[in-house]
Length: 119
Image (cartoon, rainbow, N blue to C red; front, side, top):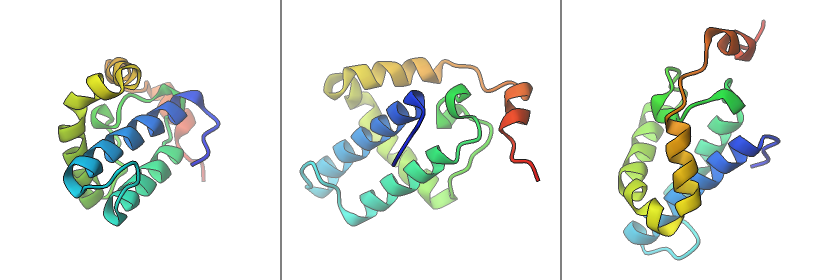
């Protein structure tokens, strides 16, 4: 994934770290990930790239616009449930920023209008 925005790149790094942690512990993979986890990671990256809120976004779980397909959303939810509590020990800086980002308010209507695709 190629992110121009520092915030979105950090969000992707966090999701990636969580998926690797989950896959390693559940599927016996090392630093690599299995096929289904790779698919989830790629899908998450695509959704982050297309997020209409970008820099102004809260964490996905707190967003009013759920852009994940239901099965992918459930996969991410399962990964987060497992990896979330373990992130402070394994990746404390990413976990701290994710916690702070989760405290952000949802984007205002002005940001939402700017972010909405025209057409």
